[in-house]
Length: 174
Image 1 (cartoon, one colour):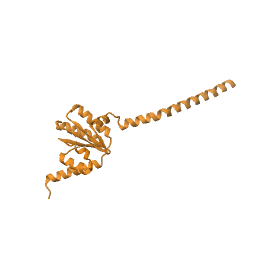
Image 2 (cartoon, helix red, strand yellow):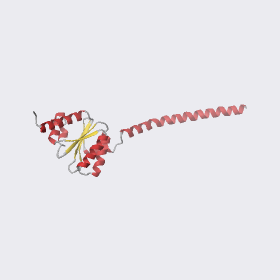
Image 3 (cartoon, helix red, strand yellow):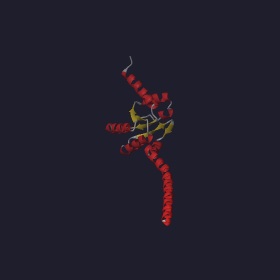
């Protein structure tokens, strides 16, 4: 029979591995000095975007990352840190983190990974300034819709002129 501490570590390690495999990437944050209620608020906000904040012992996180082949991220696991796994939109997650960091300066963005690309804290900040996927879709639709509307207006004007011309001919014949 295994000791409880060992079971907790194994469970945490498995959770990290499973979360990583089912997500698009992760962000490592250091939260030393951030109050627990504030971290709970951050966790709830992240949960709404499909992201998950997981706090685990550094040794467990390092071991799981080593098994996953994330050796470049292992060096960012120091002091109390949390792993944020995002499944959907990394831009939304980075926006939440950067907004939270404005009010809580002790939160440090260490870096992360997005679909096998290593992220620095600067990359995460830049990503937070990007428009969301929905805004980009709206911009593409407007860009595609503009020329179509212009063609319809031109064709409509041509048709109106043709009808006006025929009406003038009719009036002359009467």
